[in-house]
Length: 151
Image (cartoon, rainbow, N blue to C red; front, side, top):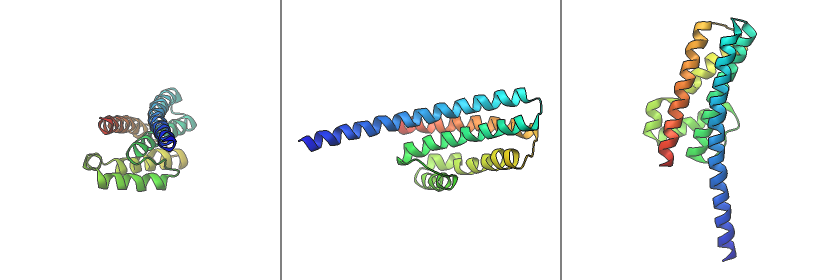
């Protein structure tokens, strides 16, 4: 009987911690996007600040992706490679996720925000502005999927 009780307590703890993890990552995602927008608007075209804004926007995508992966698989990815693999597997298993093309969208944000803008220093203000909108769309789609997964 004691083993059953301990298992039950452990299971409740895992469920609660998991829910907290998902909510925390989503909260972080929105905070990073807000910070990215603020920095972009205040940058006045300063390349360093635009690049920092792009990296914050990219981190918003990473945080939302981690929330999604944890909610669907129970695992926490440790690298961008693990995120890509997990998104591919989730898209194979869930048609709704596949239709949204989250893996492709994740990779597009990775390329433009993280790779080109932040690391390569390609500062195209119009492109970054478009990317910020795409990050918001991504976060909204992840939230909708998570609401559906919890009901």
